[in-house]
Length: 354
Image (cartoon, rainbow, N blue to C red; front, side):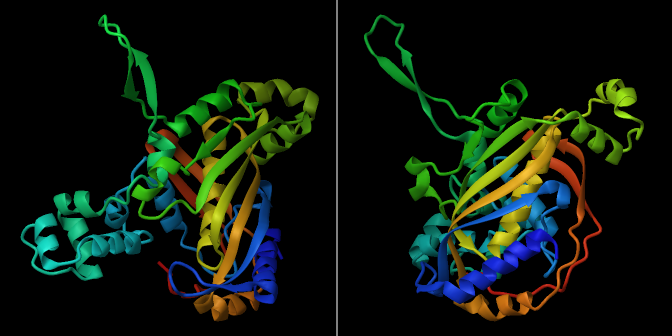
């Protein structure tokens, strides 16, 4: 059994064995534990569970959306990615409480739209999408446009200061620091903007991540070079060749922190998403993807996922797939990603709790 599926199965068993009953904001109810961790070495394969089919394309599109700094579901909907549809529709329903309000907010519409009608209108009506497709200042906004203000002295003869809005691009800053100061202990990105939580449709579940680098040994560089099409000659003969081919000299690891963990549906998605982000960052700064660590807070199974979790536990994992990346332009949220050798069990259907 590959170590990732093994850890995930152990976590499911842990929750089923000792999880406590807790109610939640959705009203579904959960079995919950607190303070768990997932670890993975990226050299062992791409961290995509094999005991059920995972929606890799959906996960990839969501990450592109985050990296673009986007917070409107139109990009996702136009690409047949539906993971945030429920949150947008809930916001729409909560804000449109009467026909009068509906007409005020959306002239020409005389009744509350069904979810299907709502999503179709997001696709076809740009003005409607602009109004109702936006989820507030969630992940992409915080990653790429964190709001802050800077003092500036008044130079017009008057005493005092003024505030200027200065957005912070945390992803750009992270890449710059990795290139110029890779041993820094401040290589972090946060999505938990306390001042804007009330404006978010859903406060971030995975609220921040930190990266860490270390120098690779000559032996590690030699192994990587050989595994990526380079020479397998003795170290002494290829050290110069490795320099000519810009072989990475550092390993990059990533640790994310998550306050709320939907273990059956959400966590496998989160593991793969941060694994992909780690690979993208490593490629952007010419490093090798190393360790992936997830620190998990309230780690729960919804009560309507118990049977599905037990079904998954009966399955025997396959080997993990490999990942091939190309055309990486992380700051524009563009890249191509391909899985190689992804063997998996069938999908297990489960209801999403919103």
